[in-house]
Image (tube, rainbow, N blue to C red; front, side, top):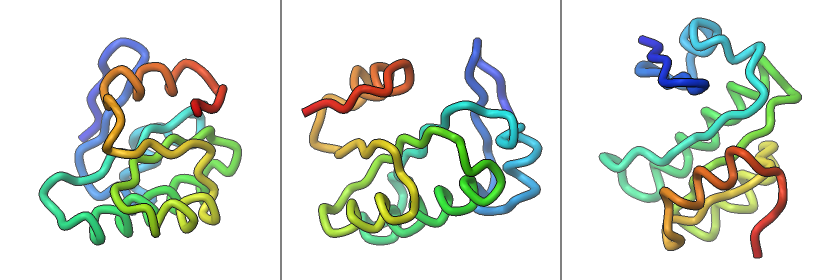
Amino acid sequence: MCRRVGPFRSIKGDPQDPETLVKANIQHAEKILITADPDQTEEHADINSILSLIACKGINSSIYSIVEILTSKHSVNAKHAGADQIIYRSLPISHLMYDKLFSKEMLN
């Protein structure tokens, strides 16, 4: 299921399934925000976020990607998978997500 809220689309479904991503129009998207699943362990949430990133980049290699990563050891893997920016859970998340969506500048 794909839901549009203003200029944003959110998908409900398997974010690693190409069919779901095409329904969400990922092939024409400029940016994507991948958040960690709060119902999974940190390890599994990070792995699934990285797999979702790979699936998105496989359909649209130029998409600007912002990925929430929960464990420091997976931040390197997210970068290897093509993450343009990484959000760490320890930061004030809602403000940071909004800022990162509309800016390509790295935050220190």
